[in-house]
Each structure stands twice: as C-alpha cells, then as structure tokens.
Image (tube, rainbow, N blue to C red; front, side):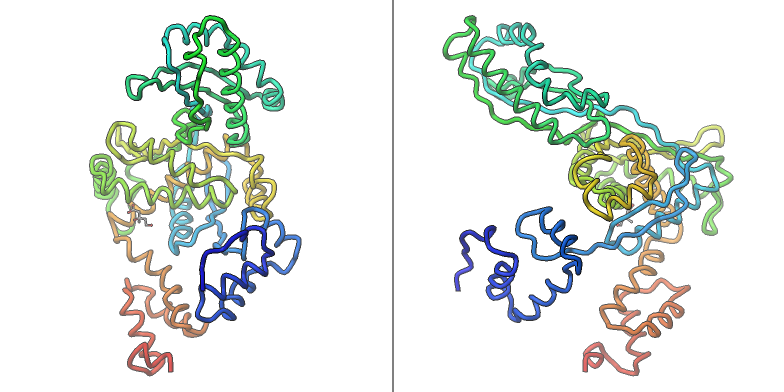
Length: 446
Ligand code: MEV
C-alpha cells in the first residue's frame, strides 16, 4: 500500500485517522481507540484544540502541576509547570521552600527590546545607500503607522531603525535592523508585519529615487524575520543569604558552599557540563513557559545563544561569596507575552495566568527566571550532596511501577520499601517480582 497521500489536510479528521491507522499500524483498531480516547468530551473544547494546528488527530497530554511557595519580589506564587520529567516539579518546590525561608528570589528586568531584520542584497555604493536610508527613515515609520497604532497606544512600537553593512561577511548583503518594544505581547506577528512593510518601503523609495542606477534599484529582499536572539530583552533573578544559613542535607554550610561554587565554575569553563547545567535550568524555564502558553523553542534558542556570547558555551547562572554572603543568580534573555497567542485562548493557559495573578510580561519574565534559578539550585544542591539519583528515582519509581501495571496498593508498598533507598531499575523490578511471588518480568505478563 502506498504511503504517499494527496490532499491530506483537506480530509476530515475521521478520514485522516482511518487512512493513517490503516497505513501505519499493525492493529488499526487499537491505534484508532488510543487516538479517540484522548479527545475532549466537550466538542467545542476539542474543536479549539483541533484548530491550534493543522492535521490534529488527538490531544497530547502533559502533566500540569504546581510548585508552591515561590517567593519572588516578596510576592508568593504557586508556580504552574507543564512537564513530563518526574522530578522537576518536586525539585522546584523543594528549592522554592528552601529560599522562602531565606528571603526569596529577587527578579529584575534589565531590558525589554526585541529585534528583527530585513535581509537584502544591494548591488551598489554603500555610502549612497546609507545617506539615502537616513534621509527617508521617517517614511518607514509613516508607512507602518497603521500597523503600529495600537502598539504605540500601549507604550510600544518601533524603537530604532538602522542600516547595517554586512558585505565584509557576504558580498552585497545588507540589513535593516529594527528594534521594537512590544510591551505585554511576545510580538512576533507584529514585528514580522512591520518588517515586511519595511521591505516594501525600501524597494519603493529606492525605485522612486533618481540618485540610483537601474542596477542599484534592483534591491533583492532575501527575507524579513524577527530574531529569536533577544539579548536586549533580559531578566536577572537572584537569591542570597549569609553562608551560615546554607547547611543542607547533613553537609556543613562551608563545605556546601565550596562544593557549590566549584560546580558552578565547572559549568562556566566546561561546555560538556555547561550543557547539562543549562538543560537543568531549562527544565524550570520551559515548564513555566509551556504552562503559560509561550513559545519555549524561542526561549531555548535565545538562552543557548546567550550562553555562547563569549565565544564559548557557558553556564547561565553564576555565584559569589563575599563578606560571608552567598549570592546565586541567573541572567537570561526572555521574550515572553501575557497577551496574544495562546495566552487568551487555551483554557489551561488562561488558568495558569490567573494563578500567577495575571502578570505583565515583565513580571512573567521575573517569575520564569526565578523558576530556572530554583531548578538549577535544586540540581546543584543534590549533585554536590546526596547525588541526583536519590530524588530522581524516588519520583521515577512510579513510572516504572506504572509500566509494570502495579496496583495502587502495590505502589504504596513499593514506595514504603524504597523510602530510604536509592533504587535503580533492576532493584525495582526485582522487588516487584518478589512481591508478586514471581521470578521474572516475563512471568508477570502471564
Ligand atoms: C536532569 O533533567 C537535569 C540535571 O541533569 C541538571 C544538572 O545536571 O544540573 C539534573
């Protein structure tokens, strides 16, 4: 049977499922039932989800949890987190409680500007173009006035426009670099719409001018697109306390701080470790970004570019000890929106915003940064004291038991048994088999 399909997007959902299950599954009925089991029983809610993307077949569930006791700028939040990794919410809640008693998180927005480019090719004299561009700059603002009207009312708009000569890297390559303030919206559509108008304005203004030759007038627009690198949309979050308040998990405060500092330094100088260190930070950041309906791929991309800004990939967090005070902080680009996109559309996203007291984009930047910092603190604290597996396997235990189809009573018994142990996969399976009175996993299935 051919797996090439024409006009798939135009089929009904039922027809898509029929075609897919018949073509790709050994047991089409079972596959169909799985897809249908996750449909929402309210047709209107399901339709909303169907219309988020093309070719929706069903819904993909992620757990939505909260990490309570996050004190950020003296306000207490229950942090909404959407994530599949067992130990992330538990670690966030533990770190939040730890810092609640030590002053909480202090978050500060450093800047909120975003950038986009018209990338174009121009075959002529740079100085001529530069002078011309500056002489007609007002026209770029005027031609986008209708697009920027509402944004300007809200205090945002186009902040700056520059012509950039990139010909030393790529022949005949130039950019209009535009800087924007998008207030509470992430602003991607706004920025891209402005950029496409800038491209039209550039081509029109140049073609109407009599200072350019025919060759120079033939400006080729390569593309118009915002940049997800937002080093000028930056937030910082910090925790601090006297070193002596840091005694933890049976390790003295001094020993803990020394090991912790070392761990952060390793992530600063060693890209292999920095990647895992930052991955842990993104556990905290992405979970809140997803829960609040923002674009986690954009945040990921910006954070990793920012982590490489020195020319080497490094840790996004840093720490210091001065005059007996321990300070631990994160500085990350964070282009978020609290209006537009999914934020006013997805019922659970709306709920997450309400849970956070409907924050402004700036407030949300500070909340998300604190979540990343907390997650990193939790990971480093575990790594330099008990090791990571204790907390991780405690949470992962349930996944393994679910795979083994344990009953609720069996789960309780197993949790009790492993309470003070650091189990690994085989230990769990062996203990479970022993409990069931069988000698192997194969026997469990009989
Ligand atoms: C696991 O998802 C994240 C950690 O590996 C982060 C780290 O090592 O810092 C625990």
